[in-house]
Length: 161
Image (cartoon, rainbow, N blue to C red):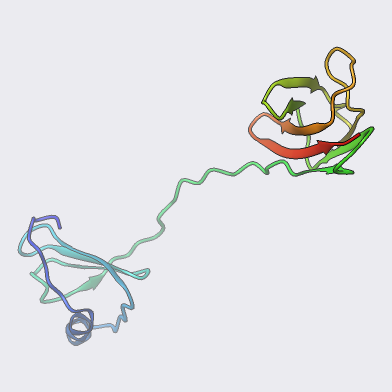
């Protein structure tokens, strides 16, 4: 509270007092905050309504609030991907939902197997299970990580014999 005082209030008693004192009827379903700057000036913030007093709560007035602007950040759409067939033996097709910069494939120990750079015009890539030295990877678990400028998506695949 602004003045350091603790205000005990009962919402129903307060509504009855407000209804008796206000010229217009205001129904407050939820009271979020009651705050007095001093013994005369106070505010009540409710469910979409702000009331104020300048005479120690003898009369309450509805505040004319035009708009409260919230700062919002537009969330960039995230990447969604599929890998089929999973498990795979020879090759696996990786498909994604939006343009990506690169694909990283890691083994189960977190070591980089290969970086793949997909074509800009496509939304899929066929990986033949090769590492960066053009060798065939061993059977096991691999993690495919797709990255764009803001997000990454990780999926797990299994290579079998």
